[in-house]
Length: 239
Image 1: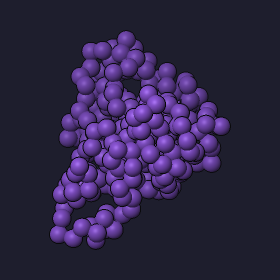
Image 2: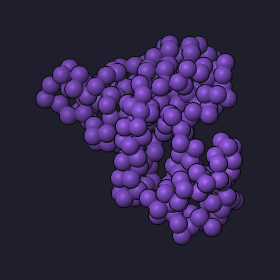
Image 3: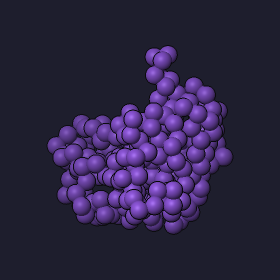
């Protein structure tokens, strides 16, 4: 479970990126995080993972407070960042084994998971090649595999479909649903409203760090009858 309680984050003493945000993603739920550029989505996800610290409020991953029990909280997280350009001098298999070592994944379990992900994302042929030779989409698929190699209870994904080919995007969406169906929590940001509409149990829409809506899509469309999700989004976030 993911629980955010009245969290705020200000940069440079004046730019309030996240403003008193509260959110709960229950076990078995997929929640889509929607908002225009600069709305505070990435800042929120980075606070969830402990990359940056919240100025106010509390964040919990399962029962662990991200500030007070950082290591235990991070052990539960699989995180896909908004950029796949990291560790590029490593071969794909070296990178996956590095992440598996960090999370102390047993050898037999990691081999099975790496093989499964490599097959689903067509990575078999490039595992022994340096990641700097990969395309953007191939690097993104490697980040997905690395985030899941320790079978995390919580997935946090920042624009995970960016750069993926249709087959890989389809596989990732299936994996997100499988993960939630297994009783785990998924929170992902996206600009692809159609994906949120088809995949999410709930959505949260934010702008300028403030929550505009949090609930099911049925609840949202009842507030805006005769409008599709894109039109609702534009209406809610217009200046």
